[in-house]
Amino acid sequence: MSELLWADIAYFFDPDLMGSLPDVRVPDASVQNWQAVLDLVGDSGWTYRYAEGEAALPMPTAEAVLSRPADAECPELRVWPSDEVLAIFRFHEAEEIDFDVDLHELQGQERLEVLCGFLRAIGRRLGKPVLMDPEGDYGHPVLGFDAQADQVVLLGRAAGQVTGAGRGS
Image (cartoon, rainbow, N blue to C red):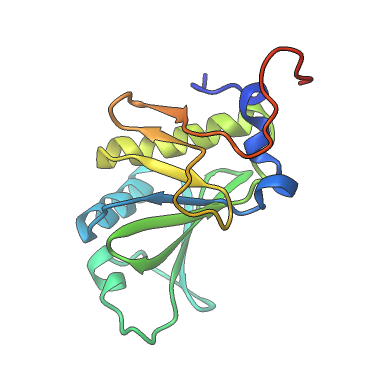
């Protein structure tokens, strides 16, 4: 069971209010952290696809993908922690691991638990926080994996969020 309950956090997963593609990130990362994530994907049994442009390729090393020329097309790694949930990693820089998830796919408790498990796996592997910011609101995470607490926690409230007793959910 997840640390979070859908009824308590559904607001943060409303694509009309929060944007459909929140940014998920691991700040203060390194090439070694990227490699640990690539190793986790390979070890986990999750379905994945690495591509540069339209060409599907074998999983590279983090060092190889992060040292590509500045004008090269940005590769992406698509990871399905479940058949219904997709995370898309983009290799913009070594200092931050970033990926997108689609809020349309993350509706209900079952899918929330998939997301929490995915964030938890990455955070535990790295020993670092994994933060989810609303689309276009970088630096204001609403939830994430707290490495010290060893769980996914609610980190903030969105503007206009209704709280307290009497809330219909």
